[in-house]
Length: 313
Image 1 (cartoon, rainbow, N blue to C red):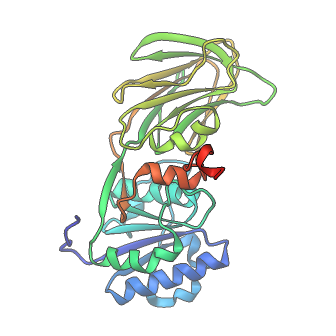
Image 2 (cartoon, rainbow, N blue to C red):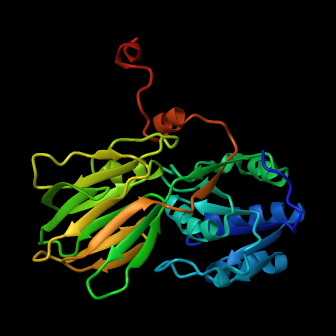
């Protein structure tokens, strides 16, 4: 269990403020935290939608999602004890951009549709906040990805992802020609719509939609999923967690775009090289209830756990 910090208690709220019901819920959360002695922070870009909070919160400068956050830009939340994301998985990923560089644990409240990342349901929120105040929660460290984009005659560009890094064709009418290497050894090459490198956390997101397997979050592995490949052998692969996956674009091929978590994009010209490996800095996710991933998986996808024979009775 988490131990009480010696410094003043601060919490950062990141909300999907385009929905009035979430704005209302965010106000309730801020009230509960403020009553417990927390200093509450909200992003500058969301402060207008959360104006009802008044002087109960302090605005902090937002951080552009196009690149990695700079610690100087996060001075207003550097001492945050916890970051709360109120929305769907998209809001959670936005909050992860702020929680990761300061090492703060991240708690997601699911107000979206599926919500594999933001798993706390609204009905449980008052009890959950009470447990946050009492430090009655656990924290999981989730594997991230560090990505390097190497382009001729240019400095490498760095990016990161919690769910996945996808290399996709730039133009819809084109086919992307790629060669895949693992730990510097050539593996295969094909034409495709793209290639995804996913963490176990991201296996239920884009990688799952592209035909990849569901991987339990406790498994250490790097998932590689070809997207609509023109090849007989183009199956999803599970590489060792410390492997380096290299995606090379053909010199005479077409441009691509690297997209991390559906939020941060970088253009990769033909001949470019994308390297993906385990991230040096994980994302710390709050766990309040010891709910097995199997239960969450069955609930999120409404799986028929009773079996077809029993359901006929």
